[in-house]
Amino acid sequence: MENDRSPEEIFAEARAELIDWAFSRIRELFESKDEKFEDEDAELLLTKLPPRPSFPFIILGASITKDILDWPLDLSLILTVVAFFISVAMGLILTFWCMGKISGGWWKKALIKWLWVRFFTMMAIEIIPFVQLVPANTIFVLMAYYKEKKIVKLFEEALEILHKNGVTEIIAPGRGR
Image: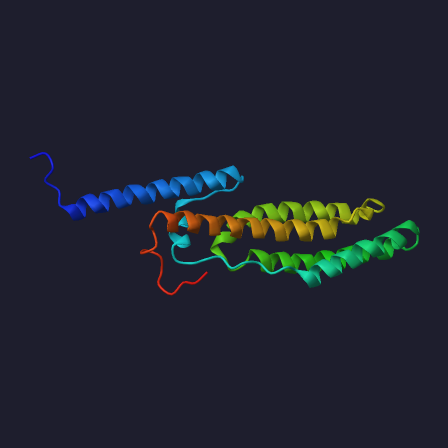
């Protein structure tokens, strides 16, 4: 006979094809947003949901304050030295903030390189007198927040794709959204 398979085998094969199709759609989604989705992401996505990032009000406030202080300090030749040391102090604060941003989450690996490249670019802008008038700290903090939010949103959309394709049974029990 041509079809000696049981209904369970046919169902399992159809389910595997559906799951593969769902993950190919997820990869396409990530690629369309210039992000990578790898096999290990797929495994972790089924067991752990990335938490939504909270808005960094304190860091943003400190960055805005520092960027505002740059104007009067940098326009005075003597106070340019003070502006430099304030930039270094803010750089240290943002270093620790960045380390907190990239630690602890499996889904943050896409954020690590992106964040550090922009951090060092921002620091280069901040240590050059008169160029530091550009509000680089504020721009950096907002870019980091929105990049992290974008990545989490992509993983949430990936879960929606899986859910729409019936891949809810293999997701860890008790995991809420």
